[in-house]
Image 1 (spheres, helix red, strand yellow):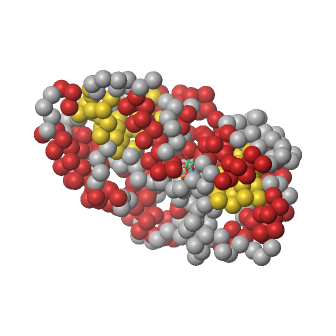
Image 2 (tube, rainbow, N blue to C red):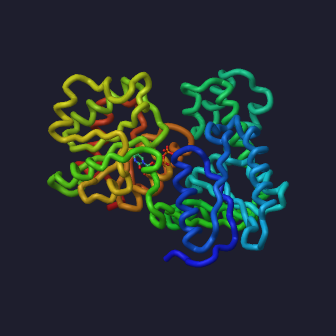
Image 3 (cartoon, rainbow, N blue to C red):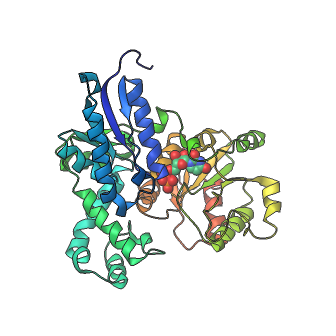
Length: 394
Ligand code: UDP
């Protein structure tokens, strides 16, 4: 229930600009607003093209923006009481400290993935990678030697400069310790032991308040147009728990040959499918023009392809019985909340840890680890949808 009347306690929210990061922050803002807080989200020109390298460019305009806001404060109600920032926008902490404002970190991913990520930095430092490395081959051998699986996909398709920036950012993020608290968008029971270990390690309050998508409305439609025709298509299907939903989130890209192998595997599995192919997500193609000849027949008989789906509604639909996911944290929690088991095909970053955790620890999914080819796809889809192999979900 929304609080009415005069709002007090202005909060400044600084979301990450990746789509999967924007949503949880906006959802947190919606919840806090409903509790009577007043919310400010600064819009910075520099921020629209925000990336790791542009953090320094963002800091000064952010500070100026806050200074303007504080100048205009005429009463206690208008006072900024706290900055809540997405961990990736780490320049916010320095600004908060300089302006003597309290700050809170919002961590979008799972706690387990953060623990693994923190473990990477000492390894990198131990190998002197961050200080002296100046070649991609050094980095590759470090990745091979270490258990730094979380970063390894970044090697593929990244320039050395990008790899180095990413590694340094991980180190930078690890140093954000001056904030007053950390909020995690996770579920206590899902990551109980990781949460307990993290509580021992940190000397500041931690709050796990997820899954945020359950407490605030879906906001993904402001980013892409949702094709709701797929909901009608789902309604028309005959049996419950029979559709495999395929979506690789808002950032992941694949190659044309991977699209073709996915298509053939889905067709050969004989399972009905709802497949999200985001425009621009297939390298070298605009959309699905590179799909193999004859695939339309499988789509006509038992498939539906859309550019963007209302994912939360899709996962809550009775006809959906499985999710082939890239294991982004939002998708992971959305699927688990609806009791839908997952085929884990992580692509990069924390998705690898999430995939391992979903399949090996929580046993609510299975990993498709080998090279992406039609036989593997067919096998994974049948294991999940037909054999319902060893899954403790549903
Ligand atoms: N999503 C959606 N429709 C789609 C695909 C994804 O609404 O067709 C939403 C999904 O519900 C999730 C977000 O996009 O909230 C993706 O976030 P996630 O953390 O899973 O992955 P990322 O996009 O950050 O890789």
